[in-house]
Amino acid sequence: MVNAPSIRKIDGKFCLTYYAMGPHHANAMCYALADSPFGPFSYSGTLISLGNALYKEQTEPTDYVGNTHGGMVNVAGVWYTIYHRQTGNRSCGRQICATALKRTGNGGFEHAEYTSLGFNEQQLPAFYCWPAYMACYLTDAKGKTKKNSKSPYIALKEFEGGELDIHSNKEMLQVVTNLTPESVVGFKYFDFGEETNANATITLTVLAKCKGTVEICVDTPNPDNRVAMVEIDGNNHWEEYSASMKHLTGCHAIYFIIHCDGKCLGDIAFFEMNKGE
Image (cartoon, rainbow, N blue to C red; front, side, top):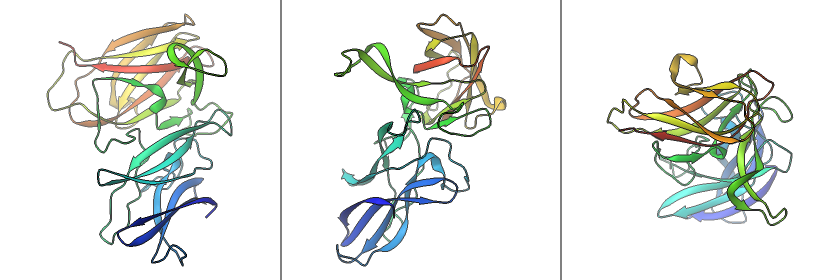
């Protein structure tokens, strides 16, 4: 345990959640169980690790790591872990998150995957306009995530139609920025349904500093899994860019691979996939 303990009574047991650190740059919400709120508590597992640093066979985080604090809440019979992530722009940059937990046979909880789902137990509907700040995968060209480097990160930027910031009195929005060449921005998971969509399109809302392309891939950030290629003009203001998209069915993660002529393509605010007619 590092800090931030929080106790809930679950099925007659007292569940202590806390922030812990471990191998492979792991920063995680873990839990321990006891028969009394005074302990002794026995370590029982990891609820979630930032950037999936400890999830299954993964050995490196694919999002920013740092301290995380939170607890648990039960909504309609489902337990969720509530915690904050690191946005990557500075040491105090944080974003609140929620992830549904699955129970184990012995009354504990499985190690949940770090995704974009939030309070959703099921995959998100693919054909909708989604904010880029829900990205759960942010890596540089070498597949690494590190502060003050070439990794994309989440930042608050001025955006017409965004939320009014009481400090600056400007309309602001969280966006994904620092889109360096060959960096990757990923989202998990989307349900494309069972009907084929031959005329599907994807639209990105981008503030581009230079010309480039955004390669859209599914399941893994691999060009072999490309489903669309969006051409971007470097006009240095917010604009929507669209491209046709290969038809998909079922559930998929979506990854944006960034290609650009300069040191940084710019910022992404939203993306929208459309079925077409």
